[in-house]
Amino acid sequence: MNSTQNRFVKNLLVARQKQRNGTEGFTLVELMVVIVIVGILSAVALPNFLSQTSKAKATECNTKAGAILSQVAAEHQLGSTEAAAMLTSEITTNNTNAEFCTFSDANLTAPLYGLDITGKTGSDLAGKYDANACVQAETGKRDLTYKTGTSPTAAAADCT
Image 1: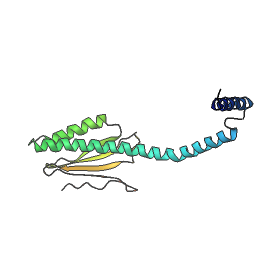
Image 2: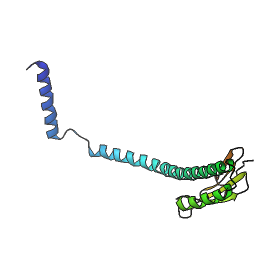
Image 3: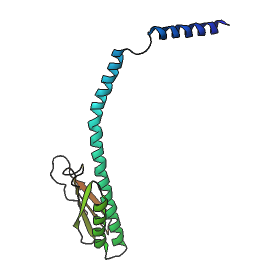
Image 4: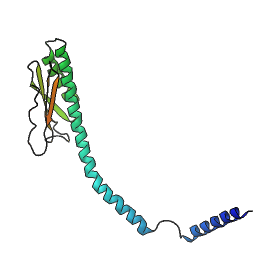
């Protein structure tokens, strides 16, 4: 055996001896400190996480409203006289399928079409989410406003 191998074997034997003596590993105090730190980080992160989930649910409502208005504007652009009926149909379909929001028509007068969106009763967004969306089908101008801060309702969307 050369000197490098001798040192390696010696270090291995010392390490095994320490394991047997219980001089390696974490103490109870060290483990408790880690648990306290993880607890503090969790207490700080959890409220932020919960607010992000509400924002994601509101974004889903905004996205669905945009999709409804895009379909109606496209129908209007094709020269169809059924765009208002399509809006009503899309509202009914999305109210059935949407988990977090309820849609209602705010304006069915061509070429301006509008939606009112509120948090669905029984969902996380009930009483917390209120929005107005519109599209001017001839120019393609779109607007979506939603309740912010302490205001009771969203400002009117402006597509003129």
